Length: 484
Image 1: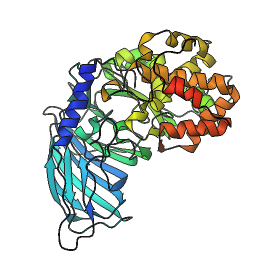
Image 2 (image 1 turned 120 degrees about the horizontal axis):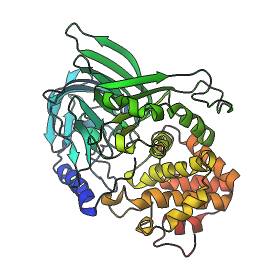
Image 3 (image 1 turned 90 degrees about the horizontal axis):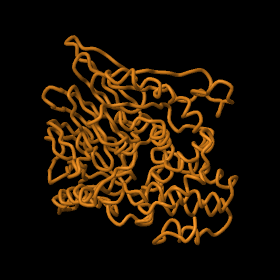
Image 4 (image 1 turned 180 degrees about the horizontal axis):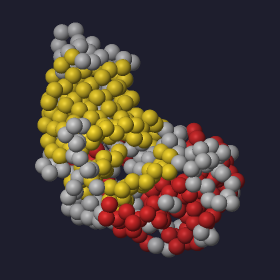
């Protein structure tokens, strides 16, 4: 995500609202009379959003079938969720904000449902044994309401004049589908969207089908086989112009440059609102080349699809690294931001933070990816950007690995000081070892979730030395060191 400039009160509005709603959450209690299972936890005790996510199961796959009417704003959906029980379950929760729940089943049998705040509790007719795979199907409908900060930053299902845009960091995805909405629980997705004639419906991954009904409505099916955190799921509906490219050889290799991997690389689909298509065409055409260059820096691109979607200003106030196809308002669609959000496909999307406290593993790394890209391809030394960031007082408000509250997750230290940590690591261990750390980190935790401790431990293992002094000053220390 591009840095969101929130005031403390504004960001606190989101955190407080989520916490207040979550505290209303109820759960089933253990039934008497020989019931083996117990209810899964309503919340994963995340350091900043303790009620986000749910315990007792691990989602493997979401099949979301959606129909949207832009005129009324009504969304009708069915979520078919395949999961594995991590304990004996008598009941389990899904995160869902608003919307009206219809039928609910577990393994094809009607299940009792209870709503309390943002918690939907399902009690199957029979307990689910630990290790068993099960399917929960929830039908729902209504007019989704986005989550909105007092400063105007919004997330979730954002209605537009001719459609909608769905973005979800950190909690907005629960406004449009029920799920285990915590970054530690990643899953594959199939998203089927039906919209009125003449509109485009985009989502993550590759489009595997598109069909037109006799009434003119168009249904598109999108497939994401690689694991994805729910906050990275996206839907875009409206009048869009799309461009698809898959050149031979490595994707987007500029003339005269050696192919980075020797493999075909991802297909690339970019989209822009029709009125913005001509103005954004040149930069959208750079996506294949930027991905190819980033492959040289970080290793193979982690997904089968790449791209970008550009929406009108006023739809949302920030760019977001939605998996395989980042979303940009026009005002944020510049080369630096494009490099940042595409770098997130490695840092944040493939290797995902295990909790929101670990967000610097996303934002600090994507910011340093800008510095590395600029150094190699734009002749701006990373050290110069490091010194500029070091001189800025705002970057020293708190340690990047320990934001004081949820209000501060998108503040400057997470981005800029996070990048400074990596540059100091590079200067300490040398370019060759740093490159080994960066690439090895991405390979070891590919399509998984990881913590800050995972990274610091891995870096020390590769470097073959104790780096505690570096972490103490740059990652966890209070205040600015005397010299950069």
